[in-house]
Amino acid sequence: MATTPAPDAEPPRPGDSYVQSFARGLEVIRSFSAEAPQQTLSEVAQRSGLTRAGARRILLTLQTLGYVESDGRLFRLTPRMLDLGFAYLSSMPIWNLAEPVMEGLVERVKESCSAAVLDGTDIVYVLRVPTHKIMRITLGVGTRLPAYCTSMGRVLLASLSDDEAAQRLAASPIEQRTRHTLTRIDALMGKVRQARDQGWCLVDQELEEGLISMAAPLHNRSGRVIAALNISGQANRTSALDMQERMLPHLLQAAQSISRMVGVQR
Image 1 (tube, rainbow, N blue to C red):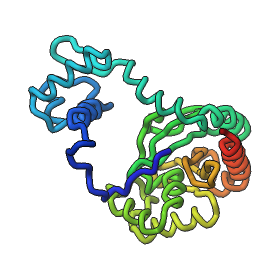
Image 2 (image 1 turned 60 degrees about the vertical axis):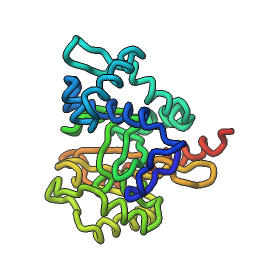
Image 3 (image 1 turned 30 degrees about the vertical axis):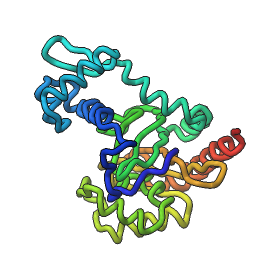
Image 4 (image 1 turned 180 degrees about the vertical axis):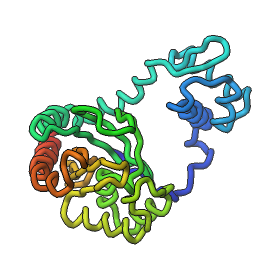
């Protein structure tokens, strides 16, 4: 996994190595979301910060390539867009190795299991093996959640230096998501350091009321943290202490197993 630049890094400037039209095309793609699954030309232009003419050229190009479809007024992404995300997943052999281990973990602990990577101030889900729905948030590959209040986020922040972790926390849109959510940077840094020292992290109802999750890091051959693995449960069924005592050994074993398999890949 490529190292994500710090959130306050200077954005790239147009030049010989910067293709502005390609960058604008990505902005058009990113303008579509769960809140805006289909848009008019004017809406795409507004959300992507482009002129109507510029947005139109990009939309028609994407339509010609099969990534966008239109009924003449509204534009929407097509399933072919999934090819772009699959290219990332298929280029990383870790996910092929991780899935059966995650399935085995779910079978043992009877809770959902996910894997995610760090992207700026968020985590991005790259693999998920669910048991049953335990969250109001719909999770799937590509889902983004804030790093500051998630177990995988804190594990991944713990892989950074204190300075970089603090910078990312400072750049995060921190909010009191539940009555348990930590919002002070110093308190959050304390949790990040704790995750680094103990090699795992537990978050008790900070992202969503009733949700408890634990995460452990996944390493590559050189020992660098490349992703995080977690299991999630419901507080009304399993307490944080019970989850830690019964499930943490299985989580750590699964994370170590995946890391070992990644380590022998050539």
